[in-house]
Amino acid sequence: MTIVHKAGKIDNNSDGLSRGELANTPDNPAYVPLEAESQIPIEGIKITDIGTEFFEEFRESYKQDKNCHVLTSLLDKDWKDTSLVTSLDEVWKNSYSEGRFHLFDGIIYHRTKHSCKTENLKKVKDCAWWPSWRKETIEYCHTCDRCQKANRSTGKKFGLMIHIKEPKSPWEVAHMDWVTALPQSGDKSYNSCLVIVDRYSRTPIFLPCHEDDTAMDTALLLWSRVISHTGLFENIISDRDSKFTSALLTNLHRLFGTKLSFSTAYHPQTDGLEEKMIQTLKDLTRIFCAFGLEFKDSDGFTHDWCTLIPALELAYKISVHSSTSQTPAMLEKGWNPRLPADTLRKDLIDIHPTASSFNIILDKVKNHAKKSINDAFDYAKQKWDKSHKVPDFKVGDLVLVSTFNFNNIRGPKKLKDSYVGPFVIFSLHETNAVQLELSGELENKHPTFPVSLIKPYQPADIEFFSFKQPNSLNCTTSGTE
Image (cartoon, rainbow, N blue to C red; front, side, top):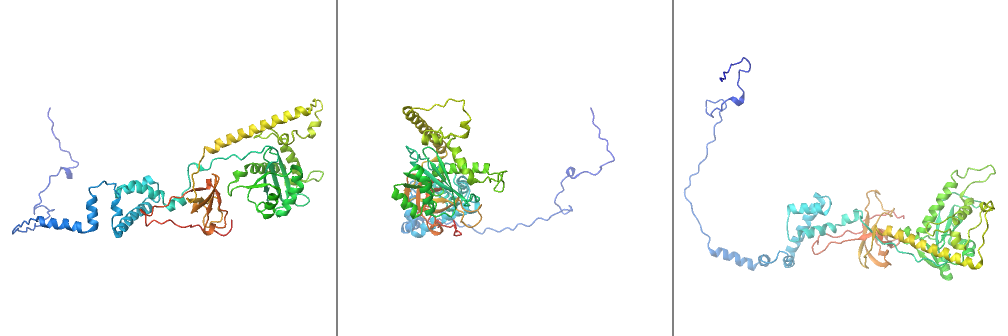
């Protein structure tokens, strides 16, 4: 087979790739003259040998200088030996500590923007190394004052559920609280309601009152409407309302032998039974007063909350409680009140227990209610303890306080620090509350806080981070709580 090239009439000019390279000569239009290389003639070479005396002088100077002697003597020791830093002069110590501080400060503040310790370890590893660098980097991250105050606490909160000692008879322990900001109702324009709940039977008492009632008005209301029905209480659980903490009621209950148990600030779970009862009262009142105060039926009656309180109280007494599996009226008195609906059921046989069997029935009901309360607490404790842990605080520890309940800190609410402090623990209240030594703008606040609102503060080691001083209390309040 023979291949014969037949020239065409298109693209007669060859492309650049097919052209041969032209020599860099004056005949080439693209000629570039070469620079003349300057040649320096070598006139002579002299080789000088440094004698041993020169090196001996250097060795002697190492021994005469204190810092150099320490450095050379430590080269043969283990790299974990910390005597290097402690044996240097103060000037060298300050330089060593300051250099390490600026290294951390530059990486954490300017490069990683207060990120996690893993990111900081990567950045430090890329630019420096020294003995125990990893441990000190992690410690620097954990003791960062800015991060401890700004970051929210994650994981389990402190404080396990503690069982309040259950009473053995009705109205031995009572819960008290107020429902305020209600619309005016009744002939005396009531705008508040005092709620009292028996912890044993869960029997409620709803008393309309006024929001501006004094401690004397509250004492007279309790004496005329409650004590005559229930007798004196052994223990009253309530929040820190000014009426309860007044000198009048405090001395009055002390005279009667009644113990006042106040809940910790910002911890409504202590008075959870009362809070749940108030929520139920609001729900029932909201349902039956849906039309407002202007609605009147054909007879001219107004469906306001004050006229509904007795009916709501009776309805709750004959309803089976989820904790006791019994009605509050049955646990309090041993029988359920008769209702209008009971008179319509005349076809049923009315069975009245004898006096001997009545005590047996009542004991069985109380034992069943006690078991149901314990089972309900065990179930709630199991759920609560899954997301909480045992606190290990001691007197004298430094802690930070959550600002979740502080509405008087100036500045944008979304950008305020999650915690303020640090503060010193002054005393411990059982295991779920601590008393702090507040300072600055927080001196007027109640010093006792639940452990769920505090977290440990990790101060920087002054020996290693002498230039890293903790910031003082940096919150500014507006003067109102």
